[in-house]
Amino acid sequence: FRTEFDLAVASASGSASATVSHSSRNSHNNLVLTDRVYEYSYLKGIVERIFRGANGIRFKSDNAVLNLILLSLLLDFGLFDQYAKLLNIPFMKDLQHEADTRELQVEVANLIYNFDRKHTEDSVTRSKVEELIYEVSYKFFVNKNFPINSSQFRLIQMLNGDSDYQEYVLLCKIYMSLCQINKSIEVDYYKIRCNGQYHIIIPKNFSKMTSEYLEQVTVHHSFSETNGIMMYDDINVFDLRPGQPEINLYRVRLESNSDVQSMVKYLEITNVFRTLSLQEQYLIFIADNSILIDVTERG
Image 1: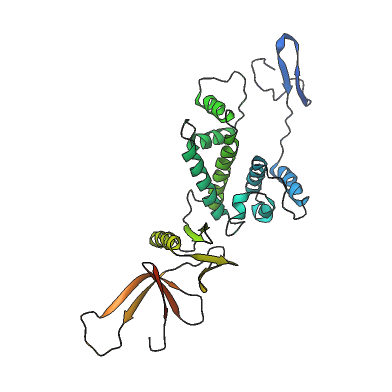
Image 2: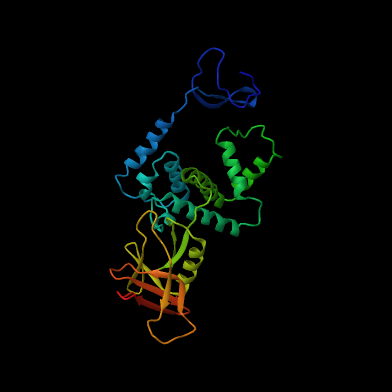
């Protein structure tokens, strides 16, 4: 083969035997690669055997980089739904539905955003990292005769200079996989505060107005969540257990049954919760107060 090649992928004499890199004369290294290509199903089988060997027990290792690598492999080989619960990743345990890729996409996007806010002193950005990942997904980057003035080289140097970027690169890679799986760059979601913590809820029908109100009202009033049911005091308001729950707010119109004439014919209130009860009940928040309205047969 020609000596200026960085990689040798063939031999003039026929097949090339696989060898590791070894030194030769004139301070050169020889590297011989075979033409063996590992198929998707072969690599998937390796990943699958790793998780089957856990026998349904969550991995004990809390190494963030290792667990993110395993998460990335599960997503790329279509094994996420089956084995996601075995990963020891703190932010996944806090998801409403641990194996929901849409909730995961929102959580990963927030982690990347928070990382970017804390690391503003260098020029590493998510778009640059994603572009680099895209480049290496279909070509080899060999650190030999590599142009040191190239943007890729400078980016790799910065990423290698800070160990925190190991997790960041993996989060970007995971986010790119989730965008392909969910066929969406962004996922609409509700941010709800329950039990003193924020929860990410992916609704069936998203409304920006509802999103803004839910975030505001759950901050000012104490909501809780028990077994997938969102509650205010002892009143059940939303069932969060389905993969994409129905979360709707209602408009209530209050009319007087009195015979007394008045300029005010009725009172209409928006952003009202309907409780999960056998009777028709509505929960209204006004300033710092809450009102529970029972609808009688007379209306």
